[in-house]
Amino acid sequence: MINFLYTIYILIIGSLMMIVGGLIILVISIIFPKITYPLIRMYTKTFVRMVGVKVKIEGNFPENGPYIVMANHSSIIDPFLWGTFMKGNFTGIVANKNMKYPVYGWILKRMRAVAINRKNRAESIERINDAENVLKDGYHIGIHPEGTRTLTGKMNPLKKGGFYMAKNTKTSILPIGFQGAYNFKPKNRFTVRPSKVIIRIGEPILYTIYKSTSIDELIEITTDQLKTLSGEIS
Image 1 (cartoon, rainbow, N blue to C red):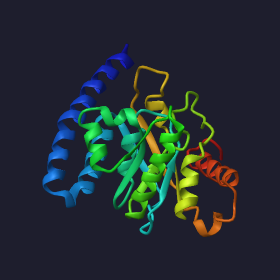
Image 2 (cartoon, one colour):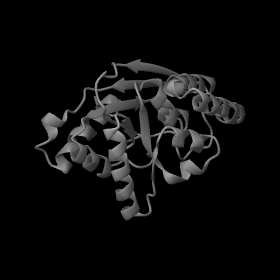
Image 3 (cartoon, helix red, strand yellow):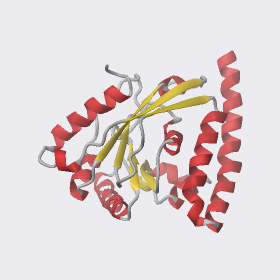
């Protein structure tokens, strides 16, 4: 019963933060575009605190780049964790349904998010080409290479799209581990719980090192890094 009441409370707080806070961020960023990303970082940090998530960041986000930033995906809170540790201009690859939500979708468009239709492979490949252009403009691109949230707390196999993008653009990969987010709200549970999330920033997987490897080998290297950083393996 306590978890149910807490969930209702978080739904109300989260909805208000999404609608009211999101609109404020959107309007200010349109008027003062140069402060868009500082605002987004401030907003996401406030949002996760308000919904009961305490974030601890281990490691430092590198100053150079851009990077294709890859993180494991286990919770509904994951999209809001990115702004707590990213630096510079950044965007992400998201499911196209996210672009249809009022306010949230508008902010994603403002950030030049790349929408993927998971049911249409040809269209997804075309959108990856769009993401490559965003990279060339100096944006970091965040991606959950599993494609969807895990149902077990263990990582799903990584999909190849982001790795082809890395190879095509000669971009280094920055692995990130989210540990504890699954406890907040997994895909197969209605209730949410206050949680501590540890975000571990790994060492970049440099293009100069992986350029001679195959896609499958690069996926294996990244999988091992993400499992270690997220606490799945020691």
